[in-house]
Amino acid sequence: MTNKSKRSSVRPIDLRNDIAKALSRKLVGQPAAIEAIVPFIEMHRAMLSPEGRPNGIFLLLGPTGTGKTKTVEALAEVLHGSSRKVLRIDCGEFQMEHEVAKLIGAPPGYLGHRETQPILTQQRVNAAGSESCDLSLVLFDEIEKAAPSMTRLLLGLLDKGTLRLGDCSTVNFEKTLIFMTSNLGAAKMSEELRPDFGLGAYTPRPAVEKTPRLENIAFAALRRNFSPEFINRLDKIVTYQPLGADALALILSQHIGDLQAHLDKRLGQRTFQLEVPARTRRFLLEEGASEEYGARELKRTIQRLLIQPLASLIAAGEIPAGACIRADVNQRKGRLIMRNLDLDLDAIAS
Image 1 (cartoon, helix red, strand yellow):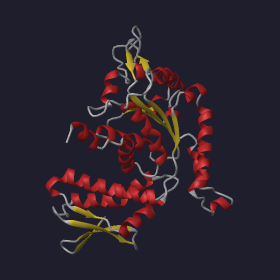
Image 2: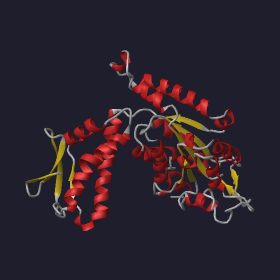
Image 3: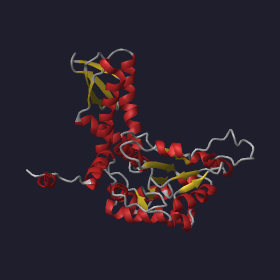
Image 4: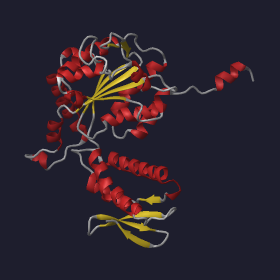
């Protein structure tokens, strides 16, 4: 076989499908977000991203608990192997005008210049990348909480891809994906999802009808709170949809899988097998599924009904290494029973 025929037999890598599939396994129920992000990663890998600006600028809007921050963490895990490979700025910490100076540091001659270390340094930006991918992820979480001077500061960064610090050094953001999340319009979205009066309070609307309504609410809130110059610098605005029953069931399976992996990692040789049958999963979904609060309510329910009782039994030494523990439902008391299948004995969670 010639070298030419060998080369022709090699199947090219489908970047779009590979990244999209990997993200879909980690981010449930938000295909529009995946479709918006993946093309910008492709452009970066093909070296076709525009010069002199970030590779992509995204504003993620929608109800609470729908996976906006999770999107960035999932992308970091896919690109860099760790959900922590994100430069995250909690905008709730910059609600006062003077606090925004922490991002770039005080200029020379100002009081505290030497003591104030800027947050948005080149070193921290580069640290949000990895050897496998030099595309850094920067997250401004809950951007609407920040003082107005933050958005003014970001205008130049979003347009030119550079930021000048207080000491006159420059930070390059060309090889970054910048994400901003916001709960703007969340209260009105909750009213739309769960009306308090009228026929809507008794007749659930299908997801197809909710989507344009939520998008209109999000865009109206966006225009009220941000200037046209800021909005015009965004590459994509994604409105997240409420999570349906199927999505929450998949998220529950993910949490249970993560819990088993956490047990194996933390307990080592003392670990055990956790079995959560279908009936128990239905019970957890009934207790924790919430269209208004999304996946966060389900996570709290898992912690309260499953993880905390397990922790009590582990701390008391009542679960032997290598055991198979099944979480059954005690419907009468509205809680779970941890059953040791190896000993055929019940351990009642406190």
